[in-house]
Image (tube, rainbow, N blue to C red):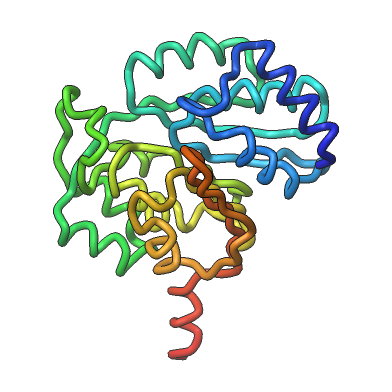
Length: 239
């Protein structure tokens, strides 16, 4: 996309209530992401974890006919999810999925990464529910969206994965659990990428090229493009 079109969309989103940062990916991160997206005859599919306020940006892009997007947002905070549901009722192409949180052991975590092809199915059989009063703990361990394996998406159909939730190291579970849903050249935007070894965890599943990263003040994000699945590559070499 052209910068002038991106700025037009962001300005419209701000007039509708979008506030960069906080509950949204930063302005700079979105600009770098959108610069790598082009209007096509088919809708771009985006899977967004957290960052609920960013829906105003996707709606602006659609209403200005700049980018045809189909967005699925997963949110764990019940109050935020309720607000988001109100915001998205009149929005086209944006679907909200409220999820509970679930926590797994270190051993179960390792299983997800060592066998990503089975991670989605396995996620439905492991772990325990996280109490609501722990949902906002920033350092909670091995925790991810409890119903992530039930998201109705087709394999190899996600063009963009935005990872901005939940709290703690467990947001890395997105990589094995959603590994079969991502296109081979999907863009992945990771917010707060240096809080935990998220990039290293992604590299356990996929090879990728780094496009840009920002570590200025409170903006810590990383944008990459996938170049293939490592597990698949290993299997081919062993044949």
